[in-house]
Length: 316
Image 1 (cartoon, rainbow, N blue to C red):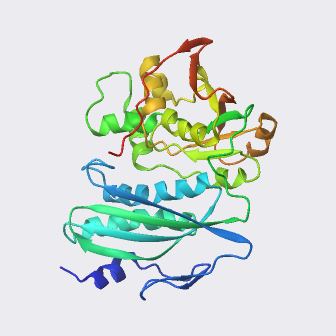
Image 2 (image 1 turned 120 degrees about the horizontal axis):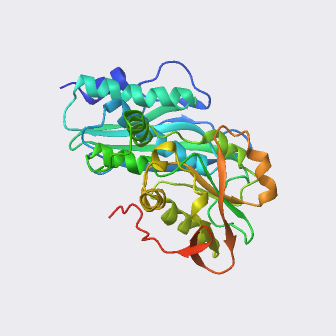
Image 3 (image 1 turned 180 degrees about the vertical axis):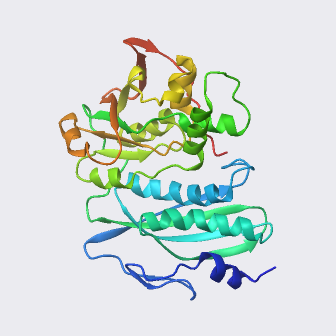
């Protein structure tokens, strides 16, 4: 088996220079230069085989998603992604897995001009931990705790697709409404989430609160409500569905949109008169509700109050 340092040099050492990297891979730690007038934004996520991605997931997709979910956290804060640290635990140094996994990471990293500046490799059960570092101008980070009564609630893209993709990946989908193209689309939404970096930066100074939808809309929106000490009215007929979800019975589509994780779209609040400022942020947005004073989440469908079991992704 190659040594740790041989693996790093062969698969994980980027070529060329990157902005802000004074010293990258090859020393005990990296030296990074934060731009003047900005603050550092840090996030980390761990990916474990069979828990966070199906065992049959292609290694390119594992690499992409492991980085994408971290960049999504930065997007939710309005940050510009800059650097990542990568720690990989492998049962064995299998060249095909390592090369495709690295390709998945660097393909996305290069898209956003992100530098891999350090990390660790070791032997054990397959798991990946990435720490992503970004920057945001002082005073412009978007937090969860500032939603205001009267704000509209918005989401980007479509939601529920990744949950349906997971059912397909685990052979749990029992319906017959999806065609092959729609099945491929949903699986791609599971394996290749797209961090909404452009939207996140556009929301600086506009959104009152924001987060990414990783554990289901209902559960994640609840974090904003709790942190901001407010409530919400959610209009379920307004939820943005893809053509794939529109083939499903309404209750099934709503359950996927509210409770399934892995969408990595942004959910945010802002005064409705400011929505026009983000119409060209690279992804469609849709108003799905409003912030109210009474705490808790109230849902309706076409004007009728409705209760749907809320059970987002549970980490334990």
